[in-house]
Length: 550
Image (tube, rainbow, N blue to C red; front, side):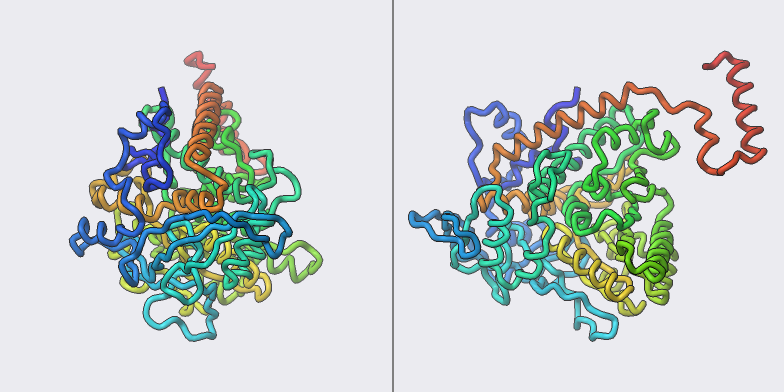
């Protein structure tokens, strides 16, 4: 039977509650505590301020430092004061909270990448501009503590943080703009901070930010349960997305429905954001009669024409050139019909796929044909078992953009707000100039490459746990919501339980459905069946009849 522990990360079974570093005490009367306490990491009570010391102690100066501060940081604490103030943009009374000083990390690195400087400036480097000297900086809005970064300073200031009314996106947006005016443009235009016109079908709410949070939990829960289902022999294959969920929800929420997505295989969250249901995910993984692909693909090779999500193909990098062709078509359509709603294509790929000839061909064609599209690289540190230090000798992937005559930016892939802002600006630039933009999102693959892989054979499990403790995107998002009183441990646990039940229900329903009919094997490729397929279908039917197989 699948139990609650299946929601935990793959490499080390440890509750997400243990990653919250003691921000709220567990209820001693809770039955959940007993289960989760057994999984508690030894680092559970370690504050964010002690992370650099912890990393230095455990890495012996050899393994990558995930966070490096300009000074020894001090822990952050929230002290509510008794007086109240008025929000200048909304005439509502809101609680005021003070934050003690905390030094900001100035550099960070994931996996084998060099230590990279962090910037709070959203700057897409154009091909005609000077490239950054040294290592390309990483754009970030929200630090691991869940706080937004101050402008041009090495610390979180002592200034007041205004807490808006609970679940009021407009007030939250206004409060953030007041507190962080250097992010005003990004915050003002962020879809994450704007309620939808109608309620989302999957959440029955128009709160976009909380939907993104729930969907990140949903994706992680689905991953854990279906991964374990594969281990039980119920499905043949699976790939998880642990540690990369902010990339999916952050980028997909910045796109428009008419934009076409060309994914690699680790971007199921972008399809989930567009409305692909748990039932549809499970139907595909179990290859039943409701699978949109009619059982012809391996699990996790999703596709949906209605949601403009092109079907996944196993060969590495093939989607890159396809996305260029689609973007060129969108360009021609826009030239022929300027009144038509403009669209771009976005292609996702990993650091390993950037070594394929399709990557080079796609970048060169896109730049010379000036196609409106986004090249989105998920640099998660590993191409199956190949670490990035064996993959390239240069400064990651985005540093190649100027050589192709392409604009580019590097972003913290575990910061949902930064990913959203970067994709939104890149989309705008791509449409206005009809040119491609390259985005490199720095992240860390917490899980195995797939169920066919055992990552403990080529990387230390302690390294994985450190990355999980320090840079987990969902924990960072949790902290942000907790700072504003929008979420607590009980709220997170409740969402996890709801999503766990929903995933198991969808999985059980998909598992008992029949497989697609055999005659569907010969349809959909050709408009009219060619003679050789007609002959093969007849041979199959005779074989089934001979052995009395229905």
